[in-house]
Image 1 (cartoon, helix red, strand yellow):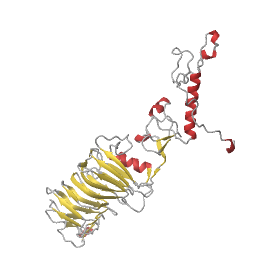
Image 2 (tube, rainbow, N blue to C red):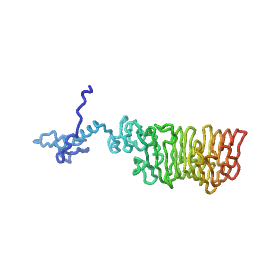
Image 3 (tube, helix red, strand yellow):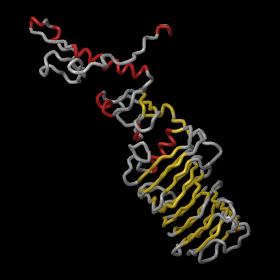
Image 4 (cartoon, helix red, strand yellow):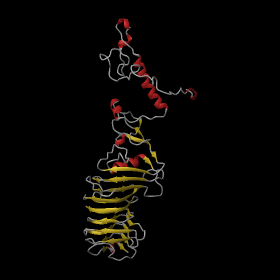
Length: 399
């Protein structure tokens, strides 16, 4: 077959100008016994149409011929125009599921193509269905904004302002799995009371040297209080994003992960400002959290700042006088406002951060090669009702 043999393009579907009774959409169910001689996708032209009219036959009808060719040529014209197959749960059910290798376009994200990797695929790719993988990511050509609303949103929506998503995790999955940032920024506008947090692993495709290209931006009176044993926000595997409030974060769990509001593993980063920290089971912040703006503490925890292990570094952004930490209601930190162990590091210079209000518990607990740097701000720099402890015998350090 040669390229010169390209068939003529279909400029308009066959019988596109025909109207009833001169055209008839072909039904799927058999029409035998319903309309003698009528065609259907089940029977095609039924046996009665092969019998001469003089012998009691009926049809075929010209309207069926027009209708059949109209449907066929409309589909062919769509393909010739480059139109992809659009995912359809109704069609999916009728055919017993999409086959392996099928390519369909998302109904929620324009330009997103899904590839079925299993036969008889009856799951919905736009709802994180198993058996699908993105064929190609959506490549941004400008900054983008998506919307998440805890009350009234739906994860089957496209994430627009009028049709927002419902959960933070779905928003993160949609962006990390389906988009190429191409150097542009993504803002996720969040509002409402969220009962699930978000766990993110890996850097999104298309990030540049900036670590804050994805922002979870919260409206006033929003909150994240997970009920599913996870932190409010977890970053792992080189994930980086920022959170801007005001938003109340509480993690009531009793494990290091489920009881921590912001949890960032070594190599990952969470940038945060405008946070209201409520009561947490273990810690408000663990690991690589970078504070870039003022925030408040209104509930206690075992520690406010916790670092453990080499590469676990908490720091206040070193912008002179930019950050004020306000404590209300004297929250209690039984293990210390700062808990640094096993090589973890905390950087908190008085030139960039100050504390307003008081808290209960030790100011800091430092041991096992961990260090806390305040640039010589003194032992009473951090809030607390008792002094801090440094185990020098295990190479703990406070400066």
